[in-house]
Amino acid sequence: EAIIWRGPMLHKTIQQFLGDVNWGELDYLVMDLPPGTGDIQLSLWQTIPLTGAVIVSTPQDLALDVAWKAIAMFNKLNIPILGIIENMSYYVCPHCGVREEIFGHGGAKEAADRLGIPFLGEIPLDPKIRIQSDAGRPIALDLNSPLAEAYGAVAKALIEQASRAGEQVPEMQIPDLGVMGPKCLPRPPIGERPGALCHVRDPLASDPQPIASIRRPQRCPRRSRCDRGPP
Image 1 (cartoon, helix red, strand yellow):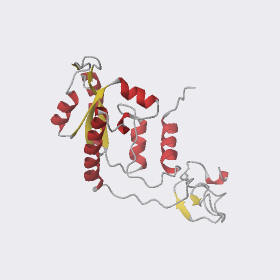
Image 2 (image 1 turned 90 degrees about the vertical axis):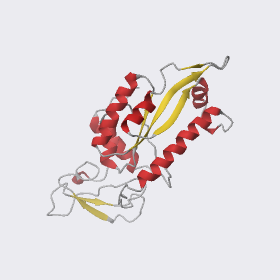
Image 3 (image 1 turned 120 degrees about the horizontal axis):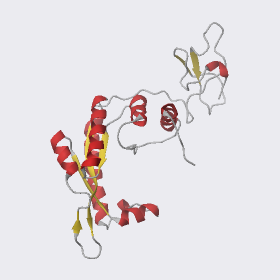
Image 4 (image 1 turned 60 degrees about the horizontal axis):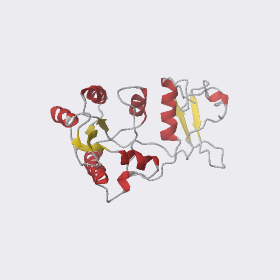
């Protein structure tokens, strides 16, 4: 079935995806976003500190126009642009070896040079990428494939840029609220306005005593009134 969500639902899903998932120890968390500008990008910016954004575009002018808008949005939000990747950069015939530039070539690199943004590399158009992905075996894991070398070069360049940008991102102080995130206890103490004080507890702990209290005007961290009781 098609999922039709307005902006508030998308925002809530992003918060749940980032806050209620036990990601464990990560080196990097990369999120694939829809093209252009929209609610998901804004929700990410409002929820967590971002090391930077990567722009992926095909070489033709129409796709680059969308990429320009995304770059302008991230600049307004003060999110560093880590670089631009040119996808579907060229096609090499598996039978004769002739190289064809179906969508043009070099448009992303030209845009990167014009804006002073690092160009991270180019990914060719090849049916093996689709076949391997559908089979659950990404072509990047095939160390003997020249396609894997292209992905590896892009990844190496991206890691270098992310390491530089990461040194300037302030660490976000988030209390440890358990794997499932914050829950609201029943009605706040007498004398407090409903919704003014939200008690936070560890949902996995046997002790129901709250471990923290967060005061916010009229709303708790889960965007539900505290006097409704636990979800």
